[in-house]
Image (cartoon, rainbow, N blue to C red):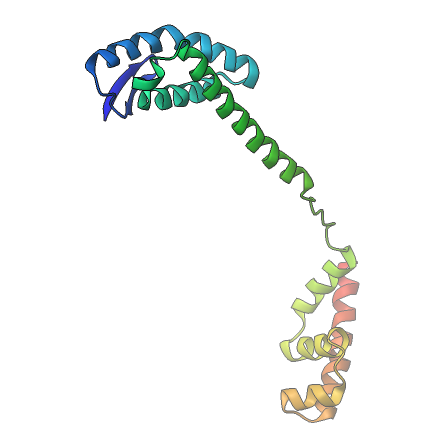
Length: 176
C-alpha cells in the first residue's frame, strides 16, 4: 500500500509496480482531478459527492495503473469509471427516494374529548369499581364472569357497577 497525496489529503491505495509509475500517476492525478470533478459536479449537483466518485475512480485506476497508463487516453477510463459510480449513486438515491415516497404517513387524530374525560374520570374512582366498570362496559364481560374472575359474589359486582356509574357521573359532571 502507498499513500497518494491529493488536494483533499492523503489516500492509501495499492502500490503500482514501478516508482516511475507513481510519479506518472501523481502527475496524471494532479492534471485530471479538478476537470473531472467539475464535470461530475455538473451531473450530480453536489461538489463533495462529485469529488468522492472521482477520487474512487482514481483509486481504481491507481490499482491498475501499469495497464491503464498504456491506454491512449487514461483520463477517458477514469471518467467512465467516475460516471458509472455517479450513475450508481444516483440510482441508489432515486430508489431510496421512491421507497420513501411509497411509504404512507400515518396520521392519527387526537383522542376524542369525551374519551379523554372518561379516562380522567375512571382514574378518580376506586380501583374495584373502575375494574368492574371496565370489564363490564369495555370488555363486555357479564356480571357472573366478573364475579368469578374477582372471586366475589355477583351482588358485590353489581354493587361495584352501581357505585362506579354514580362516581363516574359525578366526576364527569365536575369536569363539565
